Image 1 (cartoon, rainbow, N blue to C red):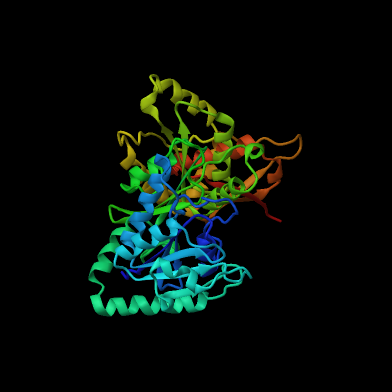
Image 2 (image 1 turned 90 degrees about the horizontal axis):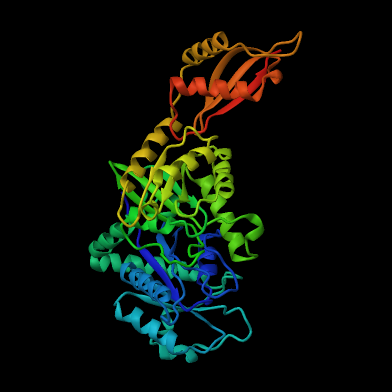
Length: 455
């Protein structure tokens, strides 16, 4: 397994770090907007299969615990990185915050490049104005995320610097740090290692339902920021863990509110990212707050997951805060009666209750999603179903299912062939699905049924 070196983008808010990451990665990974402090979690991307780039939150004064947590996260990125990219706005004179960031970066004894971003603008300042930051002009690059100015030269310099460092240090310490960080930050194409395909598990739910707390408990590291403020996680945050030899990549998404209550701008982007995470994932863990159940929105989220054909686990969070969990479970069963195949897990991020069981369920569901039934088995199920309950039709016309085949997996897809199948009532389709599940349970897995008219 090859480990890639780590490069960290640091700097004040609104210096253009997220735009630069998107330009270097050639895709929109980080959310970009004019608001300061848009990036709150570390965003990770693999650049040309050469190095991993981390886009950190912007550094601000630690006026509250939340901003202090952000600064801790940036300090962790500096400690982990093999090379640091200090990003400043080339149109603004450096202030004491820029100098503090530069001092901390240089103190790490890592290679530090200065990026004078937004240099395509006419009001961009000369390098002399940034000498106070203590970084040589030979290690300074004028960049523009908008036009791409300086990014090819920057990539070349990063690769050259990382190559030289590897020769000098034999990259022993770097690989140890990179491997440790790989266990917490990324897997798959956006992760830090090239390994076998991982099970992708997305944490889905309303804002402040406990996704980031569960994410941190699963990762055993404060990679996502946890705050009582709603809407903390805006980008899709990732971590890869090994469980019984299987890599499981966890995606922590922004909370989804009702469409009419989503704010224009950042929250709209986050909603799109969450829906994209559902599409990307193999399995979705739908988190429901035991202290504040909202059936309609949770049902809508479950519907999106099932429509996408993903595995699903219902997770009741904050169960330690309610006295009667049986009552909550009864309501959950009633609200989600259209998901009888979805397992329900009661967890607590505070106590760690049942957290490991989530990994067990993910492996079981992934096995079910890839299970292929033999055609002979399926047709035996179909004939038994017809004998038990012949399909009803019109006065002189009756639907006649003839045979059934499985045409796909992830999700399992079954096609029933026959005559006049358009007359089948929806309840009979549900009956056929139930008979298939009696033969093989397909835990946490929606199955698709199509009906094809044979001429």
